[in-house]
Length: 321
Image (cartoon, rainbow, N blue to C red; front, side, top):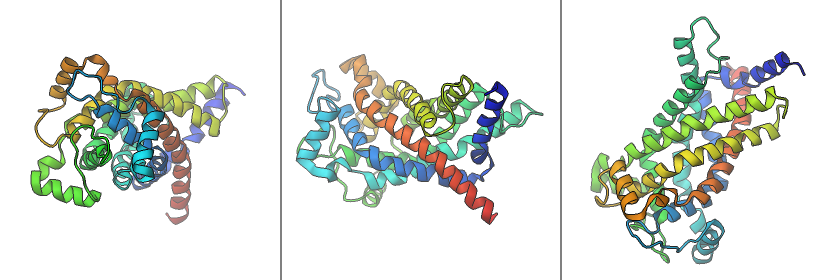
């Protein structure tokens, strides 16, 4: 296939994402993320507990040695319900976070391209710096929107009646949790850790979609893969690995800041400093194996589902509008 034909194929593949409305982008991104989290929530529970074990201690606590061991221990002691803790909250969090992150990415990218590259089609132009800025901005919007839900999800997933890791807080449901926190700690309590969420999600989002799009374009233009499921899966793997590497230190910080009930940490920088001082630099990569097990499948599923949900929403909007 000639190079110019491959370029046209790449542009054509993006047509659905580029032509649907902002609301359609939000719906497609939210739906894709909710479908993905069904499969990855157990790993998220494992990751949360692995990141909290040994907190503020020089002793290397190993209640959960690795991902398979943790899955087995949680299932043995708490069953499927234990592995899927916080799933209901995770749905709402995914809608807030990924609905914003994936839904606002293309509109923001097109707007920035229009501002910095006037005279060119802002939907077709692929500029690495604009893509990174769009990814970070859309991620921050999602982080702020979903911060209270992440806080509740973290506390629900960390709670165990058998193995007590970190500060333990039990809630019967996400709505009960939100009401309880708002009553006891006010709005500020609901947004505990939002600064850490902005850092974590901004960094992760600045990598996820740009790496995914870059990988897809590279694989198509160099004739390694053609448009299809294999291409989407391969590009998603690259995207997931990139996210895991840059995000894990700030994911550890966010988990710990969100899980605290008192004032163990004044904020993400204080948590970062205390973690380094007491536990060492390796503590910033606690739960990294779980992060890879979670983020790679989640990214693969989310972005692969999004390819289909974008087409579905585009088809619906075309018929109705």
